[in-house]
Length: 165
Picture (cartoon, rainbow, N blue to C red):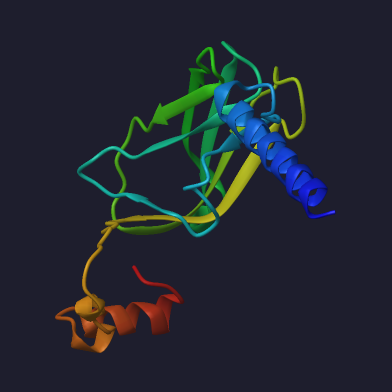
């Protein structure tokens, strides 16, 4: 009947909500090591003169986390190698010890050899450095590249380098 369907739906919603809350409350549901969801392939990190940082989570508290960045344009030369220790909730963060100019084609890898579950590492590809602007507001905020002051340099970089530089 309708009452049974309603109460089973409410139980499912309550169970799902409890699971969601549980996932945020502890690291029991975390698996291995991973970057935060704000970092994906094709990520833009903060350029010089500021120091970029990456962060994420792991399933093991107080364990060593290693981040390595390779320059894919320079035959995969290691550019950054840093380590940190995860916090009691599994969160970790590394601030790079160098700054980087605009552009680049980098690979970023996080590793946790002491984590309890797979994956023990995660790799992100096509990482570059630049400025990131977060804008919110009117629908008239969109500006096409051909209306910008640097359009010629932008088009040239895309045509000759295959990407914005």
